[in-house]
Image (tube, rainbow, N blue to C red):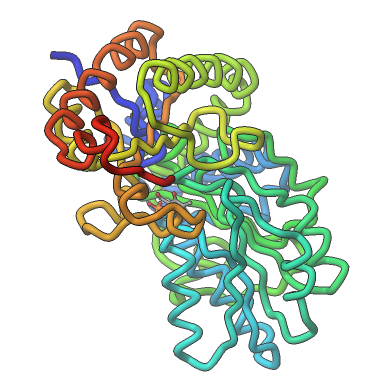
Length: 395
Ligand code: PLP
């Protein structure tokens, strides 16, 4: 049975071109890029080429790119640096719907005595710019707002929010882990101070990330030691993965526009097909401002985990929330922030596509998911009561 993979917000497959680009640095070209000899020097040049490719994708200067081990490290480093370089400022602004790589770090700093504002969202997961404007103050060291949400796919008005922070002289960081490679980002035009990304969301391997730091923004390293990354991130460079990420960035730059259209078409077909075939389900999030590859659907009176398990048996990979929170039985903090009741949040399914998904896969899912939901509902006492008119279920 072939696996049908619709969990690309959790991770993506490594592209063949990326693998090919990496291979020489896992075999013959194993020199240390910091070494003085020619053998290390050629490896150093490959790292710089990858930096240029990444910078080109983001509209940044190569010197503004720091390679890290993952998106989580980049997020931690951004917050750390903003707080260390401005010790007089004691306030952080972020949102209730961030990934744990930001939320848990913000909570950590709150325990250290910082004031943390968590911006709320409305019933479509949208931020309120008036609430944001009111939260910005002279004491704010950093605003950190995700570019796009990993669970429902909402894309936030980052350019506007970064401008509002800049007007107040406040640093602005965005966790763009889900956006890079899916959304066109031009840091030349957006006054973003720092940006985090992660290779494994754009067809590079797991365990490589980037922190972009705009020229002129003061920076204190999170990881101290050697002089690598111009003294901004110690540790011998993960050369094969850096080279792979450089290739992934180049591929994303070349194909993003056409892939966005193709992926959005398949996602819309999937979403509309499910909404039409299954009674009592609805989309979570903001269909007007969403990543092209993501849909998150709430099915009343079914456990999302039960759907996932049955789909898994059919070889279909999906998710009921973020991969980092799955494994716990807590409902998604994003869906709760949107105002979904616990039982609805529990009955939600995230399907996230990539440009590698084929139309036949979508057709297959459109056959299987309605069957699975109908089967699970036929076993649900609440649903039976509902059908016989005994109970009313409010979404
Ligand atoms: N931020 C967001 C929005 C994510 O979706 C993820 C991963 O799912 C991360 C941060 C963490 O990235 P990494 O797995 O590279 O640490």
